Amino acid sequence: MTPIRAAGACTIALTALWLWAPSAHAEPSAQLDRVPVVASSTCAGNVRAEAQVTPVQIDGRLDNGVRVAIHYDAGIYDGSCALTVTADWTNIDTGASGSENITAVSTIDGHYGFIGYANTTFDTGSGTVVVTLSSHPDAEMRITA
Image (cartoon, rainbow, N blue to C red):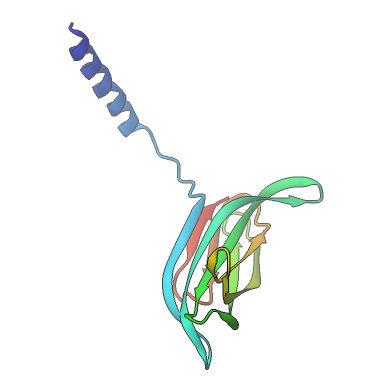
């Protein structure tokens, strides 16, 4: 068998094994697209969100958690526009749940440019976590911690 034919046979065999192997269901992060929001009578704009698995320290031990962040753009960058979003989470494997408000202020930083970012971290434990945000009705982020 020529080296080219041997390499081709090996490639086909490895590809077949790769296609047949079961895939892992773990999604370590999720995002929600930009949506329009009205933060106050003088501040509108848009917000997007993301969640990702992150380690959290509880009483000297590391456990799984989820960091939830929002990115707010009001088009006004003087610090006068702030958006508060309620983040709710549920670990569907353990039944644990929680909620917290996240507030981002639409400002400009002289070094980095536009900053309208805020985040919080939840101690969710291991399992599948569903995160919903008040800014994104009927949408959810589902990740495996």
